[in-house]
Length: 89
Ligand SMILES: [Zn+2]
Ligand SMILES: [Zn+2]
Image (cartoon, rainbow, N blue to C red; front, side, top):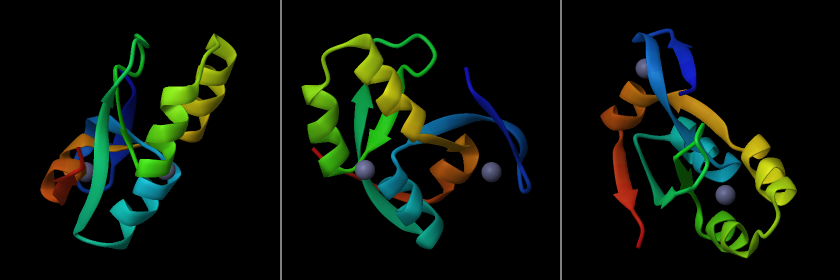
């Protein structure tokens, strides 16, 4: 499990966000994302915007999946849960 040191919460588990959800996460108190489960051991769950979700669903090879996962970043799980998450479906 990935881990971050949060200035507010100290060490914490993380949520993994695509760059666009990450931008919205830091921009305000609420943000929208899709909760996506993966088959990856290290990142069983990721939070994606609509475009990245579409891209994710088209990925085929392990290499493509690895490249994609390299682009998403961790945020403190407790900060994540303090914000208002609009779950897209
Ligand atoms: Zn995105
Ligand atoms: Zn935090």
